[in-house]
Length: 308
Image (cartoon, rainbow, N blue to C red; front, side, top):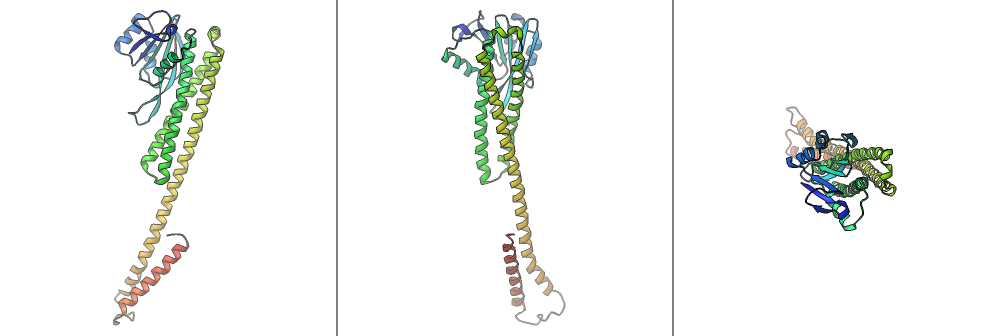
């Protein structure tokens, strides 16, 4: 889906491209691809790189076009891993500013609504670039809060009963945090490269760049903290599971010993040898009393040692 948003007209949507328009393409079709390659003359290699879901954040220049790939957070409800990151391609040349994303994310529509509501002025393509950078960091923080709330809910369920389903949910959340940490690190490296572009520094708003840097650092620190906490929680529950298994095995062993005592006594007196009770009318009762007595004594000893 292709949209032409005029940055000088409060991001109003236009029917065709004009100066100061942002070309925003989400989930591009073949028609959109033809428009980019045939009408705008964007190198096809750029589009192939953006299509790669594993493409890392970087900056590249070809035929006067500048490509920047930014990793942005994406909530995929149909996937086993609820939160992942996807590449957002930003392509710039003179008056052209093009963004391409092959996923329908929450970030871009929210960014447009926010800019329309706040009526913030956009001073050139670099200003719009850093605002998108800032928005991505804010959305990382939003999703990190949701991830933290989900992990707390799973931990409460695990406190009541340790089940494989809850542990698998924690593992998927941990994978999401790994994706976030890796992508944020790549975005940070991209930001450093952008700040070192001496030829473009005159177009940078230093306050905006500082805001981007602060939000990006905060998102990185938050992701690391949540990842460390979740790793510690997983290790703790693994220890609890191992301890519970040891307790169960100890109890099963104690119960087996209690059941073995009457069986052993009955086996001894059931042998075809003289034992003094073979002709007694009370032999069965004597054997039963002896078995019960030894079982009670064993039970008392096990309870005293906290085996039962």
